[in-house]
Image (cartoon, rainbow, N blue to C red; front, side, top):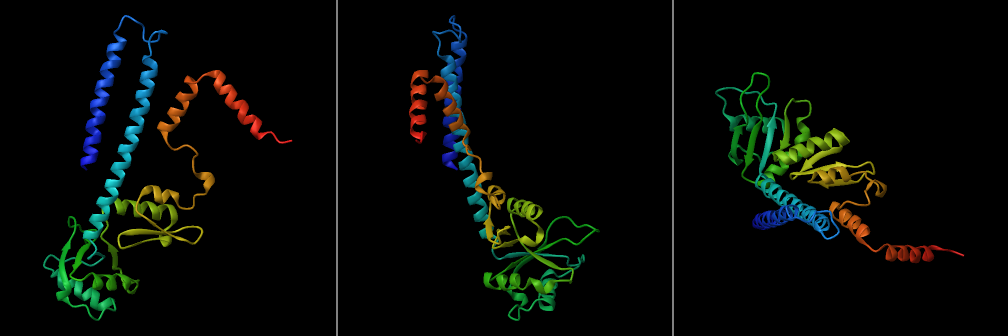
Length: 256
């Protein structure tokens, strides 16, 4: 976080300084586009610098967001969400959860004292019961209950992992793109089965879009700053040197 703050501060100071210089140059008696003025070249170099800085800053933000999600999911590793359990105003939630687990899931070592916390999430509604957040004291017991969730089939009750909003949105996007049967979660990570039959563990949108892509689908130029720099160097270069370079390259490719 501190590195991002410093990057933003340095970028802001440099931006303000350079823009003040450009403004001063534009107000000078020498026209900005005259042969004696290099304002255009300076501005183009400054634009390339800003694009590079913004790209680096975006990468830092994405990395920070990824690390935050990993830490948040780790704090939820003992939690599960229980859906479809009827709701009552005077209900005893630990007892309700215990009845569901004991009645449908094959986990004999489970007892009500193994629960750390139970609570309904969201606002009450007449349309459907609210989901129940269940936190277990032991992560091993949580995993046993999670892996026995297939016993809940055709009961109207389902289990899901307690994902962060970013992971949940990513999971929904993956299911919409690749199908419900090919997407699931494990330890807070989305798993997708690709068309090649391989399983892909994804935690970012870029990883979702990369599944089933071939090398021909990947663009050759992905760095906007590099592209701009390449364009600038080609326009500012000496035509004679450029022609000689092309001539050398063409000679290398001639086959007799």
